Length: 121
Image 1: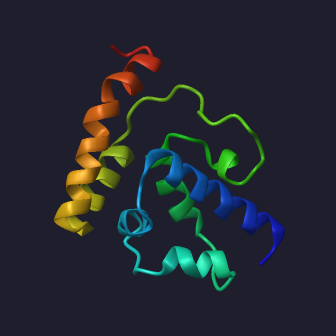
Image 2: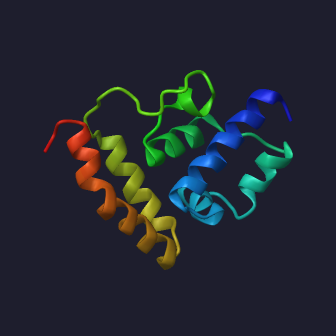
């Protein structure tokens, strides 16, 4: 595994641990199969740009943060886009009920904080 990829995976795993999110949950967000992240850890594959975008959006960090190009987690202010809404809709349809419930729990717990930090409330 190249060093850059190892650092990216390490950062993704750290974010998962901080938020208490299971590996299978993130794999569901990515429309992935169980074991996808294990393959990343073993260097058998690497996250695609699309997968990094989904992970960055979910954890509210920049792709540059995931790639260790910066230590600043939060991207600059942005408006919700149609793409954000599409990601949540697509994700919900591909998650097991338990994981979909977890997604909504996380959204509900963090929505006000997310919006107020962006000056929208």
